[in-house]
Image 1 (cartoon, rainbow, N blue to C red):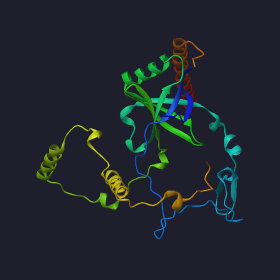
Image 2: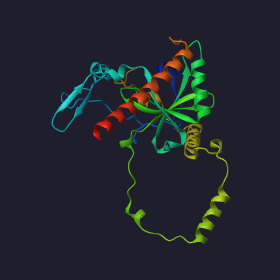
Image 3: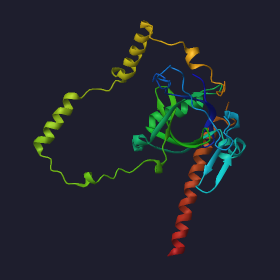
Length: 279
């Protein structure tokens, strides 16, 4: 695997240097579009609607269109944003693991220790395990601010990016508002059916049958000689672009706890003062 990002998990005054790797990959067979008459490759060109020229990726910027104005954002503009320059995975809070709704889970990433000492990494992992907590973190990756759950999988810390709250749709279906009467016998039979299918989940018991059958079909065509010469039909697409911690770990932990306690105490004092003034 190749690391896609480097940074550090930061909680309090403790930094855990890490490398980030994609934890999943797509196993779908890649298919192209071709002309049914001669098998020639069909490609999509990046053509400018003003000058009609085909544009290389290096000359493409991003833009926002509000219906009346178009704002062009260059790579320099985007890289100037402070959040994009940050290489820190900031722990915001630790929450009970069962409080995170699975619908919010998005992409998964493994975190590898990136330091001569793995002590801080192992300490964070064991703490999450023994407290049954998940760290809610924020960081920036690929020009986007990310919310994520930092959790444990085996011996590895992993990030599971989360959807933002306004990205999860509400399920408002009128049919669900209708009152339905379920008899005791129906519930009993339904429970019996569930019990008959009950077992422990093992992902190895499941295969992507479509991809297996697709591969079998492709291999059969190759074996029969039902193929075309790739160079002749696809041609060449000329448009494609070929630490160590500064502070002692125990001292950093102690100071972080004290700082957080002081912050909470200050918030309580401010709330009490505000209440007295209101009275």
